[in-house]
Amino acid sequence: MRGITFSTYDVAVVGAGIVGLATVRELILRHPSLSFILLEKEKELAVHQSGHNSGVIHSGIYYTPGSLKARLCVRGATLAYEYCEKKGIPYKQCGKLIVAVEQEEIPRLQALYERGMKNNVRDLSIVDAKGIREREPYCRGIMALDSPYTGIVDWRMVALRYGQDFKEAGGTVVTESEVNDIAVVTESPAGSTEGMKYPIAIRDKKGNEVRCRYVLTCGGLYSDRLSQISGCSREPRIVPFRGDYLVLKPEKHYLVKGNIYPVPDPRFPFLGVHFTPRVDGGVWLGPNAVLAFKREGYKVYDFNARDFADALSFRGLQKLVMRNITYGIGEMYRGVFIGAQVKILQKYIPELSRSDVLRGPAGVRAQALDRDGNLVDDFVFDGGVGDVGSRVLHVRNAPSPAATSSLAIAEMIADEVESRFAL
Image 1 (cartoon, rainbow, N blue to C red):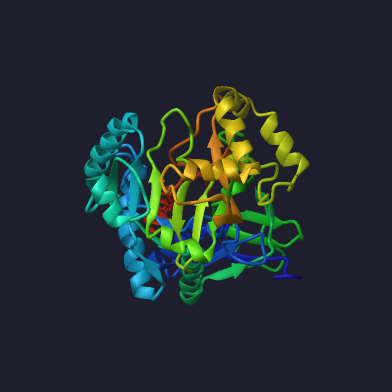
Image 2: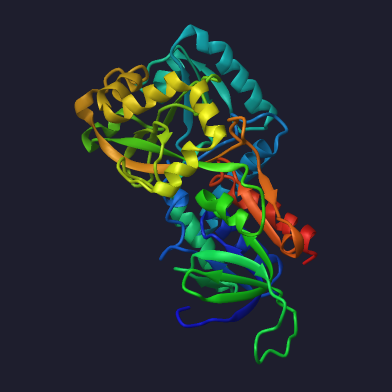
């Protein structure tokens, strides 16, 4: 789009992560007569959260029965398997064990089972120590929740296929277009005979401009800043948390067959370290969860002054840190000293040793926080104020497991877009 200063579309979508791609695909399939453009700031699509994740297809066990997250995950998993089958995308339904290694974890495990059953998770069962060994010969535990419907896939491959569907349906994709302004225009462009049919102007940092009738943003790690452009509140604020993975050496891959997860501890905000096989044959262990000093900082020393100041000055993060100070220090320690991380993993697979693992990749999670330091665990939509607000919809939070739920989320966002904009 270099050199092009003006083009018109019915709907512009900003952000080509898996949620933006799934949604723009859903919209163009519903409304083939409308024109759509997808704007992405990177050179390629789906390179951040969508390309840096564990690759799990979740079954919907953890979420509050009846909640939107639970419904979207269960439906999303079904749609994901169907989509991969239809498009020939490799996946593996390798299952998951949530393993109790301490007696005190059993009531929480049983409560998870009841949640899963209420959420209509497929084929869920509780197994004893013998059942654990039958499924995972090297895993030790006293009881586990067995979820054979859980699987693995390369979510970036899935996201890119959504983008291909969108382009094949007639959609336009523009990369290297970092949006920094969304505004209502008061006059039609020079030479236009269409008057004010396209009253919203989206401008990027290169000076290119797109005119459209409506805008949807799916900004992921930048969703709060994109929202502020059209006059929205700064909250909920996005705080980036980096998760560092270890990888199992190839000669030790036999230790893990499927996903092995701990019983989550409700005192702490994240799920804990786990064993995750990959569709490429690898095995990832982790992740930890530490504050990232840059919103797209995948390395320990990645730093951005604005991102760092933004996070540390936010009262919500200060409160979260104070409530979880011991947990946070432990996560940082385990991130530096691999042996400490391995010690936790050995609770589940005692045969694992420090020499069996190497440092692996990392991901950054866009965690939405409110001013009281609570993790925002549900979907947040926002429009803004004034004339812009009636024509813009921001997806400010699409919480995990957004990849698993992506096709179901796309249906919900498309419904919201149709309702707000009367498409």
